[in-house]
Amino acid sequence: MRTKTLAVVLLLVVGVVAAPASAGGFFTDDDDSVHMRAIEAIADEGITKGCNPAEGNTRFCPKDVVTREQMATFLVRALGLPAAASSFVDLGTSVHAADIGALAAAGITRGCNPAEGNTRFCPKDPVTREQMATFLVRALELDPAASSFVDLGTSVHAADIGALAAAGITKGCNPAEGNTRFCPKDPVTREQMASFLTRALTLDASPRVVVTPNQDLFDIELGTSETETVAAITALLGPPTEDGPYACPYIVADNMRLVRWGSLEVTIFTVDTGSGLGFAGWRYGTLGGVFESGGPLPEHVELPFDLELLDPIGDAEAVSGEPIENTNLTWRIVDLGYARIEADGFAINPSAPITGVDVGVGFECE
Image (cartoon, rainbow, N blue to C red; front, side, top):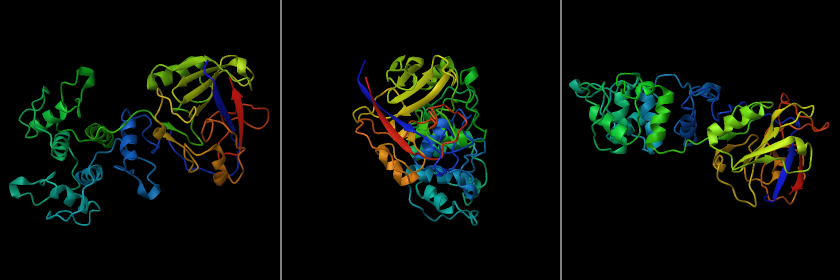
């Protein structure tokens, strides 16, 4: 077995309170969406900020329909276009006016009333799927193409829909029937838009580990059974890169199973120790300063309390106000995640909130 150095961090209440967050990352209302990773990807890129600015943009509103003015802003952020004025007569006091002008200046939009000379943009109208296709084809300068969708009829957007399909940006709208249709007249929802943009811009939408004070790993709660825990993470990340008895001779060594996906390590109780069976905790770090493949990317590990993944463990002092016991460990991490080990006898307490980082202790393990 490889030699490794592990760091255990005791997580205690020290009065540092982090803002509520979702196990999915930026937003609290997208965890059940099949488009969640795409939503997180466009949030990573600053393409979306959220849908409730008055409440701190904690929500994304994935099922809401995208309006034409919102689409303009999404595309302007995605493409980095400069703001511009426009001659459209119906923008009024829209906060998206400069972005609509930018889209028009770039030739991505022409207007919404061609019979009257395209003097209007119709900013509040919903964007349909066929309109979205043309917006993206112009933005990406894709070549027109035919498609096999059976529901395009005489749509003026047919060649653009074909171009989007040829580029792999759209798959269709009826996956249960083999994606034979595109549903061109349907409005685009915000979550669908996230997937369109993620594919169009080839953004990284791989799984993320989000460390928050009130969530567990990938929404897997502490105490989840051994079989369910491993199956759930394997479904996200693929087969583990290591799986075996826990090697470190501390706490409950003979009763633990270590399952590793690259730099992500998950510990599971296999024998009842009085603290229960199943998922006990997890950690993410480096071995000798190197991140290992097979798990989430380092940039997808989001930490609370303004801590950075590569900060030495002692840097938590700046956040919690309490010193961390520095060690000469080769692992560079901030905390253990959700082992939630209390000071009184190392008891696992799944319901105890984590509001700060207080003490760090290192162990050498063979």
